[in-house]
Image 1 (cartoon, rainbow, N blue to C red):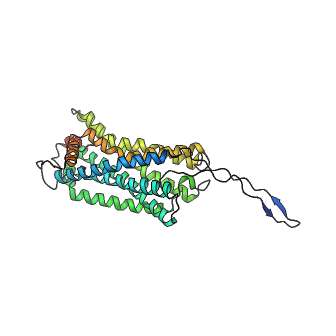
Image 2 (cartoon, helix red, strand yellow):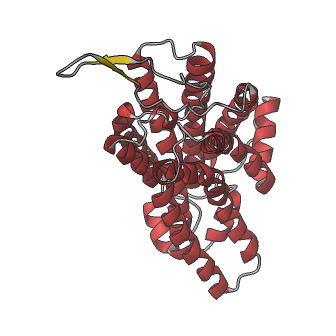
Image 3 (cartoon, rainbow, N blue to C red):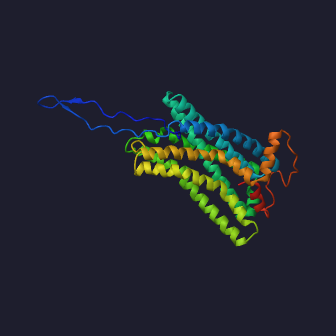
Length: 342
């Protein structure tokens, strides 16, 4: 899956073997097998992922409870997307960090059936794809709310939003199935086979190149729209809109770059520098699963207040606004954006 490697170097040499010919039996020394690149990070990933899981999973569960209250209370589609994003982050932490790395690699040393490893890999990529493409949904939702407010009023309501989210999770599972045949980069053939290369490209396109293209397109249009309107506070609104996508783009860039280097520059299996870069890139990418809670707390007073209610166990009644099936009135899309903690 995506979990870091704890492999050590492989054997230096193969033993000599007899090679028969037409006249006499002779001995030939085959080409030496190059040493596998060693893992230089030692126990650092074990400590890092344990801390990340120990801190990130509780805050994500707290975030999910708070967002579920806000989604139910306000009937805003944006909160449903944030709840789906938090849910996919929880699944990512469970399948990639806990099952894939801590349990399967660090504790069991991969001494598990091959079918189990491949099945976990499918679940890892399913959670990863769901997290990425729910973020895309959120970006498109904000674009429609700001640039087409009348259209947004007609098409954005909780029931439709939940159906879209369910479709994205189903698509994430479908796109995760091909990764049953995925090999970690330190287990790829050297050079990678056609299947290895195809899966690596599919991974990069699905979780980085295509989503980032959509982020760039929607966010650029929103920025131009806000500049044209010259609204007070437009800069802050733009910053809120860019926050989640910017964090994603920055934290997943190292892994994508290392994957391309592995395919076309130097193999992770042979070059210790690329191996080290991949271990670090994996740790940076997984940090994305734990940051959104703190981002929401920083930008949204409503979210902070709701988290406080959850922790105290005494929900505060809030008057409901608008219809139970539609978000707030279309003339206030900027207020809606600010309240979604983006």
